[in-house]
Image (cartoon, rainbow, N blue to C red; front, side, top):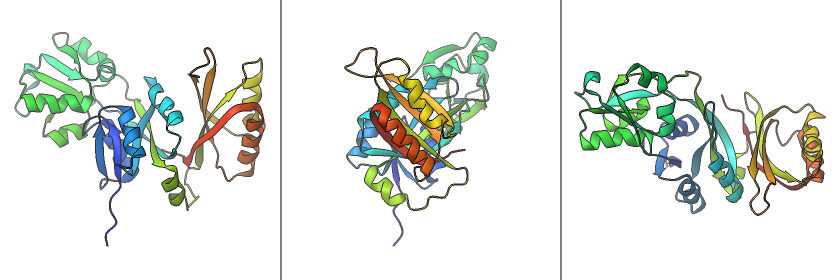
Length: 285
């Protein structure tokens, strides 16, 4: 019997950069469930409508996706099992038969529009029109048959909706990447974690809180420094119900099976009021 392909939820319309992340993480054969909101993505995994969820966590230009950090804390029955980075290539896309000279409006998500400012500076007669989604803007111009409009989105969205790419890679910064997490329910993640080999090593993500007294965060981070564990990122988020106190999300290079990592976490647990490991997963490209 053929194995059923995995089904993954993501935020956005079909053709969004998140769908490209699904392909990179799960292969072209994965089934997808597009969702309007990030919370809907997490809820779809919780109620088992899907096997996995793929969510963006940070962009090299726009920074962290704070909402998804908050969801990682709230949906405590999930685990991060993989990560990937998607190169964000913004393309100018229109309906077949529409030429660049006819374009008077360009629709896209506000973040995408702001990442293509040089294009609009060079073409001041073209209006920027914010839209709820990059791929959704392609879907809209195709469904409405707009002849004076284009969208900024991925090449995948042009492929899915039968649109035409007028100009490729119009983003200001070619070093534009978004990092995505692959999430599974903890029971499924444990069953899948049988092979502990990874070509580029392992990364661990956790969240903790400390008492709000001088030097506590320094001592917490020293648990890793004393064991030569490389910290990749630290992100603070407000601690709800406790004004001016914070949660700290931490990424570091290391496997939970390593003695030095176990010792570091034991050390940290002595200093932290709250500590949860969100996932240990192969380091992405």
